[in-house]
Length: 286
Image 1 (spheres, rainbow, N blue to C red):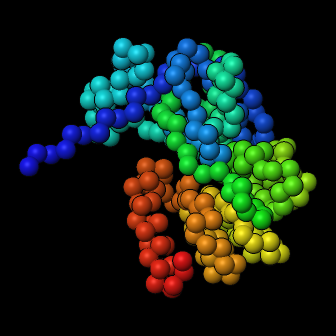
Image 2 (cartoon, helix red, strand yellow):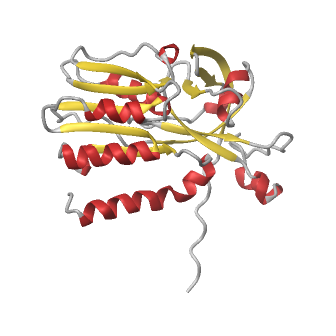
Image 3 (cartoon, rainbow, N blue to C red):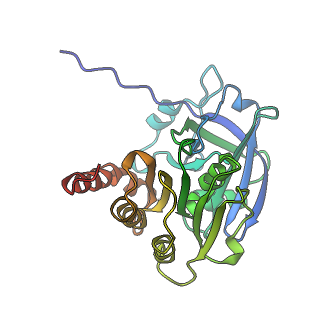
């Protein structure tokens, strides 16, 4: 028996920054484009995303014949502790005419990799993109909609709100640090957008309290809950147990976890989700 061949890695698109805009105190919008995006097409889903790849300074960037980065060659030249790092970002907008891709980045000073990069990005800077991915859109057969998340989920919630039918009803609860982090959102008149502020409190506490206090929505409810892993787990349980929302009508994901960097969280996320599903199965939740 022979080993199956290794699945080839996705080759990153080599795009460039077109312009940047600080749209809130802690959010920077970056539009990317250029000839390196030839052949790129986003997922049709509301949660379409790309992964932005970050290489150590001074790394050689060999290209394939199609102009995309030869990621395998790059990895082969780097030691294990200096491998490329990647962060996932929702496709906030895609203009097929200009072939420009818009991404929104949360910025907390010098914390992290992608935030500081976006805050200092200049037109012409190279951007390496892997993707796209995405598999969720609001259920067109739902009677109502519920969105809950923090700033990391804000771009995906914004896209989903824009795609709802004009007669949609529901709630969107978004936790940000303060009023200076709120941004204009387009949503149907029947969908109430509630901003909650973390301030100096524990991340996610106000979000959970606000969602739990919401009145019941007409069933079936299509729900989208993304953000910090512990908060997401608590809200998932509330929606499944207290509100009776079935798993097939939930889009739930821990984008990040308190106390863990992105690499550490991704390494344990699969086990985290499996643990939640095992608990729900043991409790007889469908």
